[in-house]
Image (cartoon, rainbow, N blue to C red; front, top):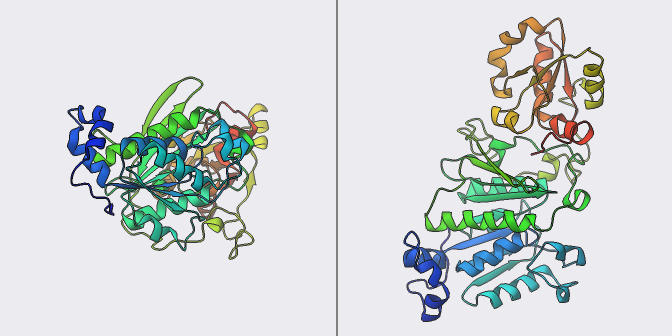
Length: 392
């Protein structure tokens, strides 16, 4: 991990006064405060999540804070992005953010990276920091940050928000899982609305971003139990917090025992978006599909096919659409015998968004099953059939 250039051998008299409430904590004390002064954190995104995270990390005394963003402040940001005020509308976000953070704590060094994080610059930028806090709102950047953190051995404190719900975890530590261990493939383009399309409760990023900052501080100071191997799920309407255990996937293409992804890739193509190298999706995995609407009609008519869920068990705990059996994709080749009695029936295979289930459908058809892929998976089911099924 990187080492801050700040001189953190001692705390100045002003810092001793400023951080008095930290210094009086037996678990934290002067040693913890000096660790923060020595530390560096990169926040990817200075929006809804980055705003509270940056402010609390600056207030806490993190020695060097880097911000990656390239947007300007808009009036619609002010409902939740508390780094900015009305007078900042039209200014580059990083100019306004650096000014606010310096005013909050002049002892903190603020680096600004007014660029779009890409495969060309991510490793160089991330490798200069001890911890990354990922507050991005799009899948290509989220997977890019994950992979770059794994490749640079930089812990990734992940958070995401949508409407009234949020998630927080810690990825890319030495022994813990990475983001790809939890979400093997992104959802199809357009299936998950952005916060601009779906909306977000203004206070939610404050709640989730503060939790994200808490995890960063725990990692930097070595106190408490970070969310490594655990996914914290927040439902603000019910004010319900659930923690799900997640495991490192030994077959993960990035952090597994034998990674197949050893350099940063074209993440727009990976996420199914048009890019310079990818204008259309490959037909290599083309398999017969059934829509969630058709599956619902079949069930309502009493003509339900056998439904196979190929996600991980922890995913089935989050969202369940009534599958007849759960067999994770990586276990399916060795467990085909368990489905032998279904060869006379139509089998519908589903996962979260349709990628893994397409692979499973192809495998089943190779072994004589009348299998179809459920297009869009549980995300489409939640969007089109039953919005009480959680998305994740």
